[in-house]
Image 1 (cartoon, rainbow, N blue to C red):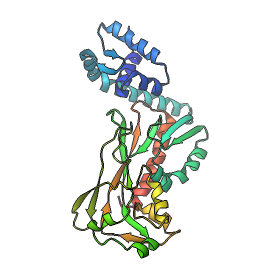
Image 2: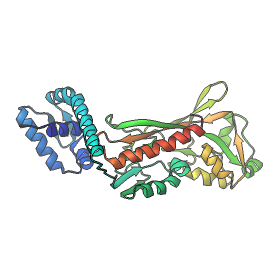
Image 3: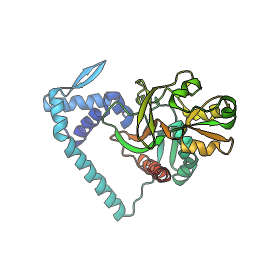
Image 4: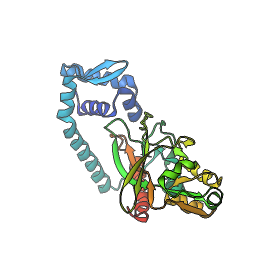
Length: 310
């Protein structure tokens, strides 16, 4: 006879996309998951998942079962969490967040607003071992990224929209002059980004730059500059300091640079592109360490958005 745990495992495997993802997320072996799903299929007398080395596909029966029980199991899990919390509160039982927490952060934005807060987080939660990666291909429990996952089952929440304006150093302006129109930009070195509109699994799409006029709202679509491309706009700070390029910068980057170099705004009436940043979580990771880190990040972005008028 099957149990609620068997049904819950089936839902998790479907939500996570395949046995391999489920094994990593749930910290159990692929063989164990496969065996439990096979037992569930035997008890139900139907094939739920069509097994193939190159693909993962639900059968019609599997799809029907998923649609039938998903919402009910979500409610049961929520009730169980609530009941456990009430019991813990009743008897004064506390469970401090602990364990290894794997996090992906965007290099530039993390440098601007997150990195200096991370030591405070690990001191507040001494039982959490925080492992931060700036690679989109790393395994993660929680991510902040402008790169959306291709799997629809991830929990995605919008955190902020970051807009960019063009700047150069005064030495650059004195040496090369400043463009007076959008059309003049092709005469100048303006480094671009080859990271935008990637997915978090690394698949790519071509990217243009959407240039917006602040007052009129008129938008122009420009091809991404290709003479100098980087997948980390943090290096635009160094490009500015070289006095040889015009770069798109955030407000925080401008504040950082003004302590080191005299900046000149280029075509200040325009915004040159934007990035939307999201928090991304696995749908079945309810670990306390993930929850407290998510709250920590959201508080940082609340402050960020209030400063930037979002």
